[in-house]
Length: 70
Image 1 (tube, rainbow, N blue to C red):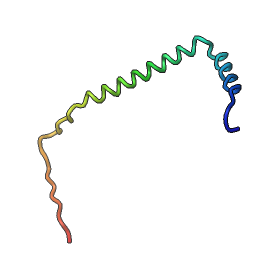
Image 2: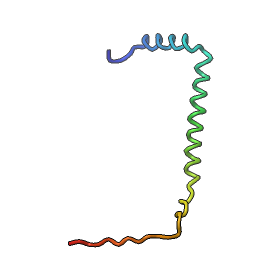
Image 3: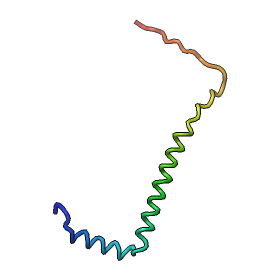
Image 4: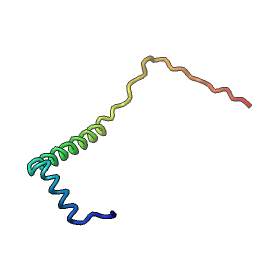
């Protein structure tokens, strides 16, 4: 049960061709490639759109001083 022989892979290939047909597989792979390209483009857009953080809501800041305890 360890590895599959060539005959196993041929049977799987025939079943896949019966279910999807010859024309569907290239279309499916093309759609996968388009998805990968758009994902990479989206990741590149995220890197280039590094905007500075928005300013604080109010102009007031509160300074906290920590009391040291012994």
